[in-house]
Image 1: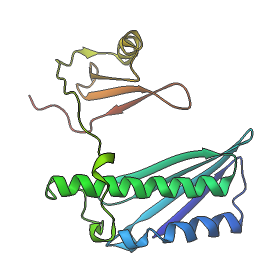
Image 2: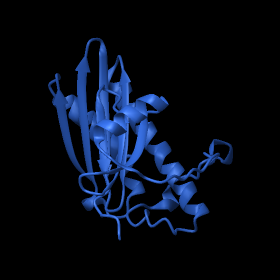
Image 3: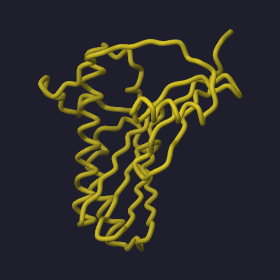
Image 4: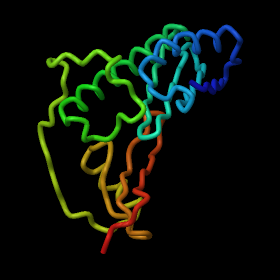
Length: 183
């Protein structure tokens, strides 16, 4: 696994770097193509809180965990536990879809213990609606009016399916589909 360790408001010491690499190395067994797997860890310090964001870049999927804790090393442990939980959940979903999800080309699912059935997420509601062309400003206004944390819409400027959302660190974000709608 290739590592990129970044510090924000904190100096990344050799001890922090070694701790992250050592703890992340226990996840190496989950990946079939280790040399193509990249890991980015961002450590930041805020007033009394340490934050660790770990992202693992695989060919077909990204795994990401973000944890805050008073102790940086505990935050690192918690983030890795969160990533392992995501791996178990992904394995369970792949098992249910008989591998049709196409996400597991770089993951060794044999090395992952399946998630317990009682922890399984279940889709409890499905909804469809017509995507109206609108500006981002109108989408944010509608999202706030609904009291939701995200809103799906069709961007009037470029006809792309878009999602606006409330960011955890404040403000709004937008995710857009790269592929345009077929007419």
